[in-house]
Image (cartoon, rainbow, N blue to C red; front, side):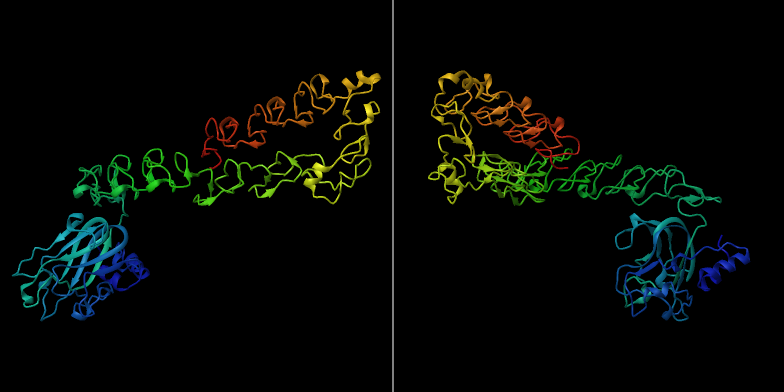
Length: 555
């Protein structure tokens, strides 16, 4: 029961004075929620400067200039109090305008509602009615009225559609409220009874009985009072047995299952049970499978994969709008455009650097190192600047000629060999002449040394150590791990068992985790079992968890 000192407590204007007076009087005083700083009042319309702030300024005068006033000629008039959040309300008290010459006939047949929705978006079927005035034309309602309203709500709405006949010729519904006071229960929202026990089975309940309040989100606002379960299901946009959970905003038309909140259908561009996942931006029309996210209508230009979440082999970048370098072989990485391999003669991450002019079969993509032609040296096979030392035939080896001509014009004197023509051929060669690359005799050996030259002059890496004495070519191929006609080149260490083609050094098979002709390229770390296609590098057995794309090179 409210204390008799309530008006005195309110008029003191501060919470401190309210507490002190009520404490020393020994009586419990409820707080007037309408006077809180967080409370906002609103009128349906305002007449001649009589604004809504006059209805909660603490002044209880009932004359015209102390009261709020709505416009005439309107079919409906209302005053709304927004408490900012839901409160357990005890009662509402209204002070209505009255004067000797002006009675409260416009106050007839008003009604008092509470709701979780504002007056501008709700109708009476979505509210809970606390009070209805049934005064007829011959009588007047009290101008000060205190109404019980044991409800939990955020909005308190005073509304009327009554057109008083005394206003003729003025027409329309009007309100003239001088002050409105809203008091909360001793128990906070979600509790009831003298000892403020928790509501059972619902978020809010009757402050005395503990029976559940049927929320506005219940269809027709009907529920089982003992459990709070909505009888006819939920309003659109809500789910759960008491319709207290909201459907995802990504559900089409906010429609979802009442049992688990699963969306009936997703809005465009979303997938998953609650449509919380986004289709790839590479999907045509942003349309993808509801469960898997695979693009339903294929990929937009330059995108690839089942989910259109990576770029095709010729493009890269976050929107796949950047073009891979023309020097890329087999495409480039979709994230940064680094080439998977380079065309012959180029190297670098973007294949924008040129291999040394003396490289045989191109060079390493990352270091630029290569196998050199004769007349070139160091890792990049550059011109050594031949000057015709030792046994150089100066007519065929001229230092100022361009390097590419030098390779074809260089020739040693008949009894010399080597890059600098500074090594003498074996004295066992007939006529003393030998190959410019090594000391293999150009023609026949001297007869008394034929056995020695036929066997020991061929390198150990020739099979059976047998070679052609005229050109140094190994007659029966190379030992394992070597290739080229003279078996002077090593197979890549990435070739399985170091086996490679005798003619060009291409690996027969790559060791695990490598691919490419000479197995120099590494499979993506995202490949299952580090296994990928020998030519393209695409993962053979799919991707490890959390990796994606044909090459499993993106997260």
